[in-house]
Image (cartoon, rainbow, N blue to C red; front, top):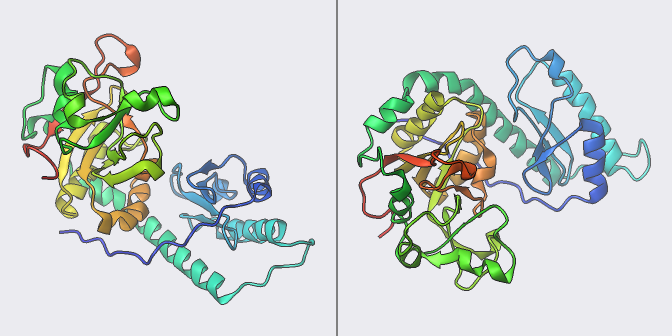
Length: 326
């Protein structure tokens, strides 16, 4: 059994100033921000990489001591030079006047370096996971504890029954949040179950407070599930990652959804103790880190993908437990 060694606590992110983000984007190009101070970008030494490039190989942090990390080693010289320029530009009040690095800064840098090494090891381990935990699309369907082929319009009810009956769940479209009229998108599972068809194409795997109108992290009262997906691995490849999480990490696999596009979404029971570790490992396995956000919506099975007739978002795997939490 593969065990995940819990990492040290993640550093507290302090909001970056607007000028800091602008300086970083001017120097590094477009940045995919995951938080106010942490994002992914193209490595400035990308042309020196000897291995295949991934979308999340290079990370930038702007809190405290601005730092650029890349999982490749062939670009170390370019990254080191870029870090010096980035820190001089952001931290110095005057060109050439460096900010004094404190003991806490050094400890934070060591922790980040350790975390980046874990990400790098995960990226190197992916080929072995794909080899040892093979689980292609057709086998996922055939091995589903609950047969789910056919009757796709009813799949949404099968999934929401994995919540508790009184859980307040958000179901809607991308922008159905934040206004008074959006209160109708927050209902208990019992209330949703009275409907005859999938209400909307998206659902949030978390549970919300009563009488809210915004799908935000602040309004989440419990995380029932962690949803995992990859937009770079094929359907057959990502099945191996799902199987590794289920069998190698002892995570309870609840459902797998075919999004009607190119990706699959695996629903696992949420395990707080493993969250920090998975945040380090799964991006190395080319999985989308945005789904670690509690209020991030995902595809609801039983709904039509982008309103296209005959192209359902559907379940291809469903556990036979009556509920994930009782």
